[in-house]
Length: 366
Image (cartoon, rainbow, N blue to C red; front, side, top):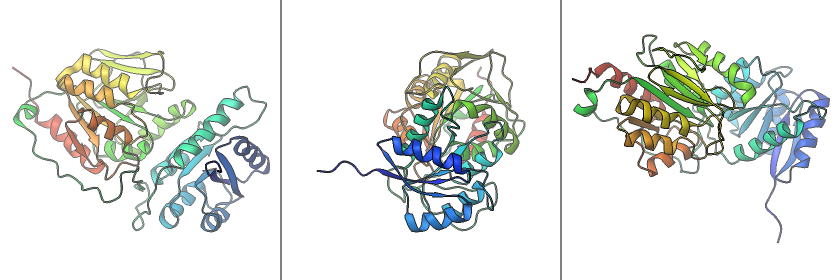
Protein backbone atom coordinates (compact mmCIF):
# COMPACT_ATOMS: atom_id res chain seq x y z
CA UNK A 1 0.00 0.00 0.00
CA UNK A 2 1.48 3.33 -1.01
CA UNK A 3 1.41 6.49 1.09
CA UNK A 4 -0.71 9.55 0.46
CA UNK A 5 -0.02 11.43 -2.76
CA UNK A 6 2.29 14.37 -2.25
CA UNK A 7 1.08 17.91 -2.88
CA UNK A 8 2.52 19.24 -6.14
CA UNK A 9 3.89 22.79 -5.88
CA UNK A 10 4.69 25.10 -8.78
CA UNK A 11 7.28 27.71 -7.74
CA UNK A 12 7.07 31.05 -9.55
CA UNK A 13 10.32 32.92 -8.86
CA UNK A 14 12.78 34.74 -11.12
CA UNK A 15 15.91 34.55 -8.93
CA UNK A 16 17.94 31.37 -9.62
CA UNK A 17 19.31 31.43 -6.06
CA UNK A 18 15.84 31.66 -4.51
CA UNK A 19 14.57 29.03 -6.94
CA UNK A 20 17.13 26.59 -5.59
CA UNK A 21 16.34 27.55 -1.99
CA UNK A 22 12.59 27.04 -2.42
CA UNK A 23 13.15 23.77 -4.28
CA UNK A 24 15.25 22.59 -1.31
CA UNK A 25 12.63 23.72 1.24
CA UNK A 26 9.83 21.95 -0.62
CA UNK A 27 11.94 18.83 -1.21
CA UNK A 28 12.69 18.55 2.52
CA UNK A 29 8.99 18.47 3.46
CA UNK A 30 7.48 14.95 3.20
CA UNK A 31 4.05 16.40 2.35
CA UNK A 32 5.23 18.29 -0.74
CA UNK A 33 6.95 17.76 -4.07
CA UNK A 34 8.19 20.23 -6.65
CA UNK A 35 6.03 20.18 -9.78
CA UNK A 36 8.13 22.76 -11.61
CA UNK A 37 9.73 26.21 -11.54
CA UNK A 38 8.60 29.22 -13.59
CA UNK A 39 10.92 32.23 -13.92
CA UNK A 40 8.29 34.68 -15.21
CA UNK A 41 4.59 35.34 -15.03
CA UNK A 42 4.06 34.32 -18.64
CA UNK A 43 5.86 31.02 -18.07
CA UNK A 44 3.82 30.42 -14.92
CA UNK A 45 0.57 30.74 -16.84
CA UNK A 46 1.72 28.17 -19.38
CA UNK A 47 3.01 25.75 -16.73
CA UNK A 48 -0.16 25.87 -14.64
CA UNK A 49 -2.09 24.84 -17.74
CA UNK A 50 0.25 21.94 -18.54
CA UNK A 51 1.30 20.74 -15.06
CA UNK A 52 -1.93 21.35 -13.15
CA UNK A 53 -0.22 21.79 -9.76
CA UNK A 54 -2.11 21.53 -6.47
CA UNK A 55 -0.81 24.91 -5.25
CA UNK A 56 1.34 27.78 -6.54
CA UNK A 57 4.12 29.52 -4.60
CA UNK A 58 4.11 32.98 -6.20
CA UNK A 59 6.73 35.70 -6.08
CA UNK A 60 5.38 39.20 -6.66
CA UNK A 61 8.23 41.02 -8.38
CA UNK A 62 8.50 39.19 -11.69
CA UNK A 63 9.81 40.20 -15.10
CA UNK A 64 6.97 40.99 -17.48
CA UNK A 65 3.61 40.66 -15.80
CA UNK A 66 3.74 40.91 -12.01
CA UNK A 67 2.25 38.61 -9.41
CA UNK A 68 -0.97 40.63 -9.20
CA UNK A 69 -1.65 40.16 -12.92
CA UNK A 70 -0.68 36.48 -12.71
CA UNK A 71 -3.19 35.99 -9.90
CA UNK A 72 -5.97 37.72 -11.85
CA UNK A 73 -5.38 35.63 -14.95
CA UNK A 74 -5.04 32.34 -13.10
CA UNK A 75 -8.25 32.96 -11.18
CA UNK A 76 -10.02 33.74 -14.42
CA UNK A 77 -8.61 30.96 -16.62
CA UNK A 78 -7.03 28.24 -14.46
CA UNK A 79 -8.18 28.52 -10.83
CA UNK A 80 -5.58 27.15 -8.44
CA UNK A 81 -4.69 27.90 -4.80
CA UNK A 82 -2.02 30.63 -4.68
CA UNK A 83 0.31 31.44 -1.78
CA UNK A 84 2.15 34.75 -2.21
CA UNK A 85 5.79 34.49 -1.04
CA UNK A 86 7.08 38.00 -0.31
CA UNK A 87 10.61 39.10 0.49
CA UNK A 88 9.90 42.72 1.47
CA UNK A 89 7.47 42.84 4.40
CA UNK A 90 7.37 46.66 4.28
CA UNK A 91 5.91 47.08 0.79
CA UNK A 92 2.71 45.06 0.74
CA UNK A 93 0.68 46.90 -1.88
CA UNK A 94 1.06 44.29 -4.62
CA UNK A 95 0.77 41.17 -2.42
CA UNK A 96 -2.31 42.63 -0.72
CA UNK A 97 -3.82 43.38 -4.12
CA UNK A 98 -3.03 39.77 -5.02
CA UNK A 99 -4.98 38.64 -1.95
CA UNK A 100 -7.87 40.80 -3.12
CA UNK A 101 -7.62 39.17 -6.53
CA UNK A 102 -7.89 35.68 -5.08
CA UNK A 103 -4.53 34.59 -3.60
CA UNK A 104 -5.18 32.74 -0.35
CA UNK A 105 -2.25 33.69 1.86
CA UNK A 106 0.92 35.78 2.02
CA UNK A 107 4.02 34.37 3.73
CA UNK A 108 7.58 35.46 4.24
CA UNK A 109 10.28 34.20 1.89
CA UNK A 110 12.87 32.04 3.73
CA UNK A 111 15.68 34.17 2.30
CA UNK A 112 18.82 32.34 3.37
CA UNK A 113 19.78 29.25 5.37
CA UNK A 114 22.07 31.53 7.37
CA UNK A 115 19.08 33.31 8.92
CA UNK A 116 18.54 32.49 12.58
CA UNK A 117 14.84 31.88 11.96
CA UNK A 118 15.27 30.03 8.67
CA UNK A 119 13.76 26.76 9.92
CA UNK A 120 10.73 28.54 11.38
CA UNK A 121 10.07 30.55 8.20
CA UNK A 122 10.60 27.51 5.95
CA UNK A 123 8.29 25.35 8.07
CA UNK A 124 5.58 28.03 8.02
CA UNK A 125 5.82 28.28 4.22
CA UNK A 126 5.42 24.53 3.78
CA UNK A 127 2.50 24.41 6.21
CA UNK A 128 0.69 27.20 4.36
CA UNK A 129 1.28 25.49 1.01
CA UNK A 130 -0.14 22.27 2.46
CA UNK A 131 -3.20 23.91 4.00
CA UNK A 132 -4.04 26.12 1.05
CA UNK A 133 -3.72 23.25 -1.43
CA UNK A 134 -6.92 21.86 0.10
CA UNK A 135 -9.01 24.96 -0.72
CA UNK A 136 -11.25 24.47 -3.74
CA UNK A 137 -11.09 27.74 -5.67
CA UNK A 138 -13.56 28.49 -8.47
CA UNK A 139 -13.31 30.45 -11.66
CA UNK A 140 -13.98 34.19 -11.62
CA UNK A 141 -17.04 35.17 -13.60
CA UNK A 142 -16.27 37.86 -16.18
CA UNK A 143 -13.59 40.51 -15.86
CA UNK A 144 -13.84 42.25 -12.49
CA UNK A 145 -13.11 45.91 -11.98
CA UNK A 146 -9.56 46.45 -10.71
CA UNK A 147 -9.49 46.51 -6.91
CA UNK A 148 -12.77 44.63 -6.52
CA UNK A 149 -11.69 41.17 -7.59
CA UNK A 150 -13.16 38.21 -5.78
CA UNK A 151 -12.46 34.51 -5.99
CA UNK A 152 -14.28 32.03 -3.82
CA UNK A 153 -13.75 28.45 -2.80
CA UNK A 154 -16.48 26.12 -1.76
CA UNK A 155 -14.65 25.29 1.47
CA UNK A 156 -15.86 21.70 1.26
CA UNK A 157 -19.52 22.72 1.51
CA UNK A 158 -20.45 22.30 -2.19
CA UNK A 159 -21.37 25.03 -4.66
CA UNK A 160 -24.72 26.69 -5.01
CA UNK A 161 -25.45 27.41 -1.33
CA UNK A 162 -28.66 29.49 -1.25
CA UNK A 163 -28.07 33.16 -0.40
CA UNK A 164 -30.29 34.47 2.40
CA UNK A 165 -32.32 37.68 2.19
CA UNK A 166 -31.73 39.69 5.37
CA UNK A 167 -34.96 39.88 7.38
CA UNK A 168 -36.18 43.09 9.04
CA UNK A 169 -34.54 43.83 12.38
CA UNK A 170 -36.72 42.98 15.38
CA UNK A 171 -37.94 45.93 17.51
CA UNK A 172 -35.68 44.94 20.41
CA UNK A 173 -32.63 45.40 18.18
CA UNK A 174 -33.90 48.54 16.47
CA UNK A 175 -34.04 50.30 19.84
CA UNK A 176 -30.57 49.24 20.94
CA UNK A 177 -27.56 51.56 21.11
CA UNK A 178 -24.40 49.79 19.92
CA UNK A 179 -20.96 50.90 21.06
CA UNK A 180 -18.35 48.55 19.54
CA UNK A 181 -17.79 46.32 16.50
CA UNK A 182 -15.40 43.37 16.43
CA UNK A 183 -14.39 41.47 13.26
CA UNK A 184 -12.32 38.29 12.90
CA UNK A 185 -11.09 36.83 9.60
CA UNK A 186 -8.54 34.33 8.35
CA UNK A 187 -8.04 32.77 4.90
CA UNK A 188 -9.74 35.01 2.35
CA UNK A 189 -10.12 37.72 4.97
CA UNK A 190 -8.29 40.66 3.34
CA UNK A 191 -10.64 40.74 0.35
CA UNK A 192 -13.68 40.27 2.59
CA UNK A 193 -12.55 43.02 4.95
CA UNK A 194 -12.07 45.43 2.06
CA UNK A 195 -15.55 44.71 0.75
CA UNK A 196 -17.12 45.18 4.20
CA UNK A 197 -15.18 48.29 5.24
CA UNK A 198 -15.68 50.00 1.88
CA UNK A 199 -19.40 49.97 2.62
CA UNK A 200 -19.01 51.96 5.85
CA UNK A 201 -19.02 55.80 5.81
CA UNK A 202 -16.32 57.98 7.35
CA UNK A 203 -18.75 58.97 10.11
CA UNK A 204 -19.36 55.37 11.21
CA UNK A 205 -20.18 55.77 14.91
CA UNK A 206 -18.40 52.73 16.40
CA UNK A 207 -14.76 51.79 16.95
CA UNK A 208 -13.91 48.72 14.84
CA UNK A 209 -11.56 46.06 16.23
CA UNK A 210 -10.07 43.59 13.75
CA UNK A 211 -8.23 40.29 14.12
CA UNK A 212 -6.88 39.09 10.77
CA UNK A 213 -4.78 35.93 10.76
CA UNK A 214 -1.68 36.86 8.79
CA UNK A 215 2.05 36.39 9.38
CA UNK A 216 3.35 38.70 12.09
CA UNK A 217 5.93 40.44 9.85
CA UNK A 218 3.12 41.51 7.50
CA UNK A 219 0.62 42.95 9.99
CA UNK A 220 1.89 46.56 9.98
CA UNK A 221 1.95 46.63 6.18
CA UNK A 222 -1.48 45.01 6.06
CA UNK A 223 -2.95 47.69 8.33
CA UNK A 224 -1.39 50.44 6.24
CA UNK A 225 -2.68 48.90 3.02
CA UNK A 226 -6.17 48.41 4.46
CA UNK A 227 -6.29 52.09 5.36
CA UNK A 228 -5.31 53.04 1.81
CA UNK A 229 -8.16 51.11 0.15
CA UNK A 230 -11.03 51.72 2.60
CA UNK A 231 -12.65 54.96 3.83
CA UNK A 232 -12.03 54.63 7.58
CA UNK A 233 -8.70 55.41 9.28
CA UNK A 234 -6.83 52.17 10.07
CA UNK A 235 -4.06 51.72 12.64
CA UNK A 236 -2.38 48.98 14.61
CA UNK A 237 -4.09 48.54 17.97
CA UNK A 238 -2.17 49.60 21.08
CA UNK A 239 -2.68 50.15 24.81
CA UNK A 240 -4.61 53.35 24.19
CA UNK A 241 -8.11 54.85 24.01
CA UNK A 242 -10.21 54.05 20.94
CA UNK A 243 -12.25 56.44 18.81
CA UNK A 244 -15.49 56.00 16.84
CA UNK A 245 -15.02 55.54 13.12
CA UNK A 246 -11.48 54.17 13.49
CA UNK A 247 -10.32 50.63 12.67
CA UNK A 248 -7.82 48.98 15.02
CA UNK A 249 -5.93 45.90 13.74
CA UNK A 250 -4.46 43.50 16.28
CA UNK A 251 -0.66 43.43 15.92
CA UNK A 252 1.28 40.22 15.34
CA UNK A 253 1.80 37.83 18.25
CA UNK A 254 -0.40 39.82 20.69
CA UNK A 255 -4.02 39.32 21.70
CA UNK A 256 -6.30 42.34 21.44
CA UNK A 257 -8.98 43.07 24.04
CA UNK A 258 -11.40 46.00 24.05
CA UNK A 259 -13.30 47.78 26.80
CA UNK A 260 -15.36 51.00 26.99
CA UNK A 261 -12.34 53.15 27.84
CA UNK A 262 -9.73 51.71 25.51
CA UNK A 263 -7.76 48.73 24.24
CA UNK A 264 -5.25 46.38 25.81
CA UNK A 265 -2.69 44.10 24.20
CA UNK A 266 -1.93 40.79 25.93
CA UNK A 267 0.92 38.36 25.31
CA UNK A 268 -0.83 35.20 26.53
CA UNK A 269 -0.77 31.76 24.97
CA UNK A 270 -2.22 31.15 21.48
CA UNK A 271 -5.94 30.37 21.48
CA UNK A 272 -7.19 27.96 18.80
CA UNK A 273 -3.60 28.04 17.58
CA UNK A 274 -3.79 31.79 16.96
CA UNK A 275 -2.24 34.88 18.52
CA UNK A 276 -3.96 37.28 18.05
CA UNK A 277 -7.16 35.30 18.48
CA UNK A 278 -10.69 36.21 17.53
CA UNK A 279 -11.95 34.25 20.53
CA UNK A 280 -10.02 36.57 22.86
CA UNK A 281 -11.28 39.72 21.13
CA UNK A 282 -14.91 38.57 20.99
CA UNK A 283 -14.93 37.38 24.61
CA UNK A 284 -13.60 40.76 25.75
CA UNK A 285 -16.38 42.51 23.83
CA UNK A 286 -18.94 40.22 25.46
CA UNK A 287 -17.63 41.08 28.93
CA UNK A 288 -17.14 44.81 28.38
CA UNK A 289 -20.08 45.75 26.14
CA UNK A 290 -22.65 42.95 26.42
CA UNK A 291 -25.71 43.69 24.28
CA UNK A 292 -24.12 46.92 23.04
CA UNK A 293 -21.57 45.05 20.90
CA UNK A 294 -21.65 43.65 17.38
CA UNK A 295 -19.49 40.68 16.36
CA UNK A 296 -18.70 39.64 12.78
CA UNK A 297 -16.94 36.37 11.91
CA UNK A 298 -15.69 36.14 8.34
CA UNK A 299 -14.10 33.46 6.17
CA UNK A 300 -11.40 31.27 7.62
CA UNK A 301 -10.04 27.79 8.30
CA UNK A 302 -10.27 26.30 11.77
CA UNK A 303 -12.49 27.43 14.65
CA UNK A 304 -10.98 30.66 15.97
CA UNK A 305 -13.64 33.22 16.80
CA UNK A 306 -16.52 30.74 16.97
CA UNK A 307 -16.56 30.33 20.75
CA UNK A 308 -15.91 34.00 21.38
CA UNK A 309 -18.79 34.92 19.08
CA UNK A 310 -20.97 32.49 21.03
CA UNK A 311 -19.93 34.29 24.24
CA UNK A 312 -21.05 37.54 22.63
CA UNK A 313 -24.45 36.17 21.66
CA UNK A 314 -25.00 34.79 25.17
CA UNK A 315 -24.25 38.28 26.49
CA UNK A 316 -26.96 39.71 24.22
CA UNK A 317 -24.72 41.04 21.44
CA UNK A 318 -25.72 41.01 17.77
CA UNK A 319 -23.57 38.45 15.95
CA UNK A 320 -23.13 37.92 12.21
CA UNK A 321 -21.34 35.08 10.40
CA UNK A 322 -20.34 35.16 6.74
CA UNK A 323 -22.64 32.97 4.69
CA UNK A 324 -21.26 29.92 2.88
CA UNK A 325 -22.11 31.45 -0.50
CA UNK A 326 -19.27 33.99 -0.24
CA UNK A 327 -16.81 32.58 2.31
CA UNK A 328 -13.56 31.29 0.79
CA UNK A 329 -13.50 28.80 3.67
CA UNK A 330 -16.63 28.44 5.78
CA UNK A 331 -15.03 26.60 8.70
CA UNK A 332 -14.81 29.47 11.21
CA UNK A 333 -18.26 30.99 10.59
CA UNK A 334 -19.78 27.53 10.13
CA UNK A 335 -18.49 26.42 13.53
CA UNK A 336 -20.06 29.50 15.14
CA UNK A 337 -23.38 28.62 13.51
CA UNK A 338 -23.20 25.06 14.84
CA UNK A 339 -22.44 26.35 18.34
CA UNK A 340 -25.49 28.59 18.29
CA UNK A 341 -23.40 31.75 18.39
CA UNK A 342 -24.86 33.52 15.35
CA UNK A 343 -27.80 35.91 15.21
CA UNK A 344 -27.80 35.78 11.41
CA UNK A 345 -25.71 34.63 8.45
CA UNK A 346 -25.09 37.10 5.64
CA UNK A 347 -23.07 37.11 2.40
CA UNK A 348 -20.21 39.57 2.54
CA UNK A 349 -21.87 42.05 0.18
CA UNK A 350 -24.87 42.40 2.53
CA UNK A 351 -22.95 43.01 5.74
CA UNK A 352 -22.14 46.71 5.49
CA UNK A 353 -25.77 47.59 4.85
CA UNK A 354 -26.84 45.53 7.87
CA UNK A 355 -24.23 47.20 10.08
CA UNK A 356 -25.42 50.64 8.98
CA UNK A 357 -28.98 49.62 9.72
CA UNK A 358 -27.97 48.45 13.19
CA UNK A 359 -26.07 51.60 14.16
CA UNK A 360 -28.45 54.12 12.55
CA UNK A 361 -31.66 52.87 14.15
CA UNK A 362 -30.52 52.50 17.73
CA UNK A 363 -31.57 54.94 20.46
CA UNK A 364 -30.23 55.40 23.95
CA UNK A 365 -31.93 52.97 26.32
CA UNK A 366 -34.16 54.61 28.91
